[in-house]
Image (tube, rainbow, N blue to C red):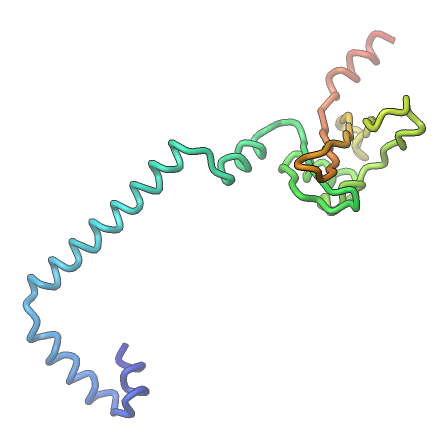
Length: 168
């Protein structure tokens, strides 16, 4: 504060310090204490209101945090490949399979709808490069408010794959 005032008013720094010290010494100490208490009370009230709001109402952050906790991967993208939303599980899966984060909804090789039964839904099985797991990747086209989107879900099927191998 001293430096800013000294630069603004082109005053020597030691002279400005003396002026400010004299002004501060003349203020009653109780006034400063009351001001600090009022400021702390206002901040506590605002903080409490914010916490209460987050507990009572569903927020975008709460939805994102919940989706990130899912063991299954989920991502939404536009038909041009732009990823609109992705959770941590599908992002980690993309890193392990492709070596980078999920930057396009088409990062996983899925069969075309013409190759499957003709429905817009497509699925494939992905085995991790180190062989430590298998995932089922399922893409489904959907429309929300008239806009087309692609929903990508990834389910860990490692245990099911192991059971199938044991049965064979």
